Amino acid sequence: MANPRGGGGGGARYHLPLRPRRLLRSPISRCAGLLAASAALLLVLSLRQVHRVGLPPRDHPPAQEPNEQLWGSDGYGSHACVTPTSRYMAPKGSERYMTVRSNGGLNQMRTGICDMVAVARLVNATLVIPQLDKRSFWQDTSTFKDIFNEPRFIKALEGDVSIVNDLPQSLQSVPRARKHFTSWSGASYYEEVKQLWKDHKVVHIPKSDSRLANNGLPIDIQRLRCRCLYQALRFSDPIENLGKKLLERLRSRGKFIALHLRYEKDMLAFTGCTYGLSESEADELRIMREKTSHWKLKDINSTEQRSGGNCPLTPEEVGIFLRAMGYPESTWIYLAAGEIYGGDKYISKLRSYFPNLVSKEVLATKEELGKFNDHASQVAALDYIVSVESDVFIPSHSGNMARAVEGHRRFLGHRKTVTPDRRGLVELFDLLQKGELMEGPKFSSLVTEMHKNRQGAPRKRYGSLPGSKGRARLRTEESFYENPFPECICLNGKH
Image (cartoon, rainbow, N blue to C red):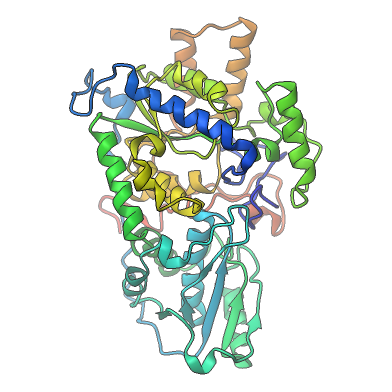
């Protein structure tokens, strides 16, 4: 199913039944365009007010001792385990080559690249450094080495797969086979795919997303996917260095939440979520949806979407939720997001609950961010770094980045990740609006009870949704990269 940014297999799953405590998925996206520029400017200016309202300077200690129940995660006795088994052999020499165009946004490309590494291992082919998507929504001209540390990537995986910067000169002009691999395919499928190299030395794969099954693969292939994503595929030095600076500036304030606030124009238009918006804003989003040809679903009932848990929480709803969970007004929140629809009109409602709301535009200087201008994937990488390393990560909606960050945090010791139960929360928010429930101890008790098992504790991946059949069921499985347990995460004493 299509996603708002034109990506592939990571599309939204609207109008499907929800299993208990599992969110429906939707695509990840980042809003852009001249129409949003003024709103973005208002947002940055409003966020910069944080430094003008007499809040503690950087060297000031936190106002109070943090509540470990809100912030703490003991790792649940787990650790990463990605060492190959004794059966795993070094890659064999091969004259087969794979070229890849990695499609989608940052995290769709990252997981797709690591799927292609695993595929190269399965078919015993040499992988040429993938080309990145320059034609999707983001129009980002970044190359692989602009975003990723290319030498490290090649070196870290040399015991798994042969990776080269480019095809040998002798193969530059030879005819290439072109193959769209079937989504969510297992090892047996790729055993058959090997036949392609009988007639061609080079096979080109035009899309890399979701080409491997989530489940049922050999454990060494699953662990290779983890070694690739969490150890080999690091960001380039400029991105890593600025990411570390942002973290240092945040940590000087104390503990902080990274909030992935999915309230961008194209996300709202694609999902048809207009709750709390004006009539003119709802019309603007509807027109955008109707004019975007690759968005197949045009007629969407916003009320049904919201009651089904398919809409991102509004900035105000996030504020109500975090306060009900027990986070004090003094909490520092890093806003990992694109341009918020409506700018200060809506973000101010969240700031009224938590005034210590900052973003990369606030924490970094214009000079520091300048080198990343017009490169959406590089900017998204900064948000990713901060989100993975935050004390608490909270996504207001599901999507590629939310899933990737959650999986990475699980891999690093099940760091605290609070996943809002949007469908359950909407019921409570509606009771508040009707005056049948008031914010306070009772409301807080209901919210915290609802989320006691949604904070990143170890669990096995969810299977397909009830009622799904055939290959369609594979689309509804929880992503391997969202939760690499148990293949890549072991409980203490187990390997």
